[in-house]
Length: 161
Ligand code: ZN
Image (cartoon, rainbow, N blue to C red; front, side, top):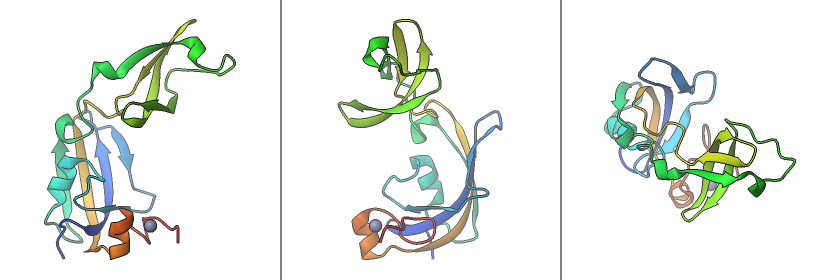
């Protein structure tokens, strides 16, 4: 069976930056389960996996545009330190959920001074060219229920029933 839209796909993956540093991997964990064609994974990887079958190995280098997006400096903001709890220990590298016009976003604290905190709402991998090494574990059609929920049930997926 070949990967196409609305298929439930399980993959083992490793993603590295252009320096060869491994940023994320499914190794030692369950394979990643996703529904093909609905943007669960970055577009460049989704395109590379279309038409592949269980057992296939795929290596693809993905540009920021087809990965986690280009960095947008407009997403870096400086806010007053007193916007946070006075006893909160705010440090660079901390990540938290914040509200924006487009809904909740994950922001990363990049700088802290006595009165200001700089936060960055870009995805941590935005602006990076990424190399994905993927092994297709299994491919099957989604059930109607999975399509309705927008996620996979069973191994690698949700177990909420
Ligand atoms: Zn569900």
